[in-house]
Length: 464
Image (cartoon, rainbow, N blue to C red; front, side):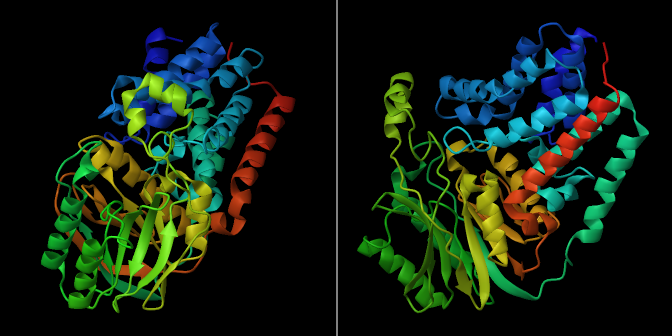
């Protein structure tokens, strides 16, 4: 195989992610990678090159305000997962087996270490693919599998593979629950901005609160039944600080509308989503369960502080232990806080026990980078996976209203101050992936394994 194509493979994969979002670049990149593994002698080193280069490009935003070392370290950690693929390729050039190994690698990196970090999963680049609805059958792993089957088809041009992909494209549309919602909840979600961007955005916590208050008063139409604020909109504990609590009470008293807001509680500290009722009482509180390593707590603190001065700035948050669903006008709402959107189990449980998903996020830490757009692409895929309307609201953007088909209904750009209003769909029907629950990735993996073993015993796919 031409060296130029094997060099370009990770660049194709990176192009499938935002800010480019060219979905078909991913199957092209993985087709080149798989073919190269069958053709090259240095399979392990090529796998490392492929994984490292793709992750360096996709995760470039992670070093925006903390420097090169943390960004490169994260990319290296993600690249290590490709080493077993290279080792396996030394013993077999059977493409289905290698594809199955890639799927296993994706599941491992979504769980280990430090709770996993699955940001660069193949599926998360595929929201605009004609195969995207496959996610409603077996979760993110099933869409990664379908995408790799496209890569396999590009290499082998097998009619049987084309037939399988056709089934993947058709079946979800037949099994997806009805798009009609039983009820709707009028809302206004506020992207109020922050006085500054980067790591010190919350150094002016009262300023962030006041900006969200001001924008809320400007945005209300009078028909809302819920006001939604992003993560870190209230960074001074509203349960302990009298001034902050008075400002919030004044808002809900004047408007007569409950407020669902992201807040930081000092005891812990805890990253929370709190429902302030229209009668002035504090209602349900959801505490973030999936904490971002190196962002909300510092693993290997001694080593981390020796490598980066920013490590000392990270306070170790306390994780929540259970889902807490908010109830507004009879509707069940589940909060998902920032990077929890990449955690399969947390999002699945939230969807199964609620009728509307709200993603509270804070992109001020990575303002002006592709992070927010990549997260929104993941959010759109989750909406399709679980057949749920999603309101994703950020301090600085991007923010969006996403329907249950993963389509963006309304949008606020990065850096824009404003609000999103609409009638949120309340839906309780479950997709196949929801019904399978935690078994969904296992079922997908077993199907891939049986497919690879079937091909292995019939005839080896050897491109040498």
